[in-house]
Amino acid sequence: MGVVRSLLRQPAALFGLAVVVIVVVLALAAPLIAPFNPDEQMFDGLTLEGAPMPPGGQFMLGTDTLGRDLFSRLLYGARTSLIIGLVANGIAVAIGLTVGIIAGYMRGLAGNILMRFTDLMMAFPALLLAIVLAAMLRPSLWIVAMVIALVNWVQVARIVYTETRGLVERDFILAQRSLGAGHARILFLHILPHLIPTAIVWGTLGIATTVLLEATLSFLGIGVQPPQPSWGNIIFESQSYFQAAPWLVFFPGLVILLTALAFNLVGDALRDILDPTQRGRG
Image 1 (cartoon, rainbow, N blue to C red):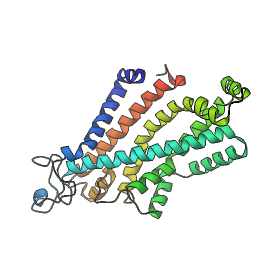
Image 2: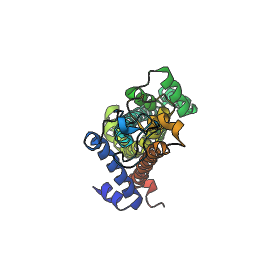
Image 3: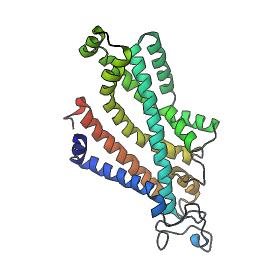
Image 4: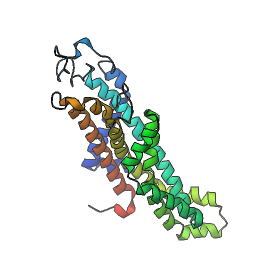
């Protein structure tokens, strides 16, 4: 509750939290809110010349190149983007937390091997590595989530490793060792609780990165495949109509921007609240 109260006292964090809540509610309630089936190609969804309908009338945000309601597709696309954002980022944080704790606690040969592998993964551009993995596998919702998780865990692992190295030298850890505490007790009861704030902060900040990466992969045609809507593939399908029907690119781009900004604002606020070294800084 103290964290929530601190968030509510920060205007930027409050704005971000409000946007996140709105996006999540709209995604969950998409079947109730969407005026049309997102895959339905309506007879009156195109002009007499076969062009998309502009915003207005029965189509709040217009229609796409196949006569489908853009507003309905954005609502269902929010489900896809948020599922990938939460699942992929959750897996990435779990992998990074595990690798970082083990490498920082064990050190020695095992720790060096884990961190050199982490450094090797960090040396590859994340987008390029994601494109290669996505191209090798058959793109789908869960494959895209796995690919994004496999390229996003390294930053978490490096941060957790550094913090764990500092914790194992603290007096309370040395005291536990002198009292005969086992490795599992030290890891789960005395080290892991100190890393939870870091995991929460990076988990929140990483959702924005994950949503953007999913949109990029879908825009490149190797993400979530049509007809399943995602914000990225909506832009991908409509890119050739950018000048004739700019709303097909503007509206999905806007929701991607707002969602990423909202999660970043919340993540920054959580970092200031949960990280003692950040408190009091502007």
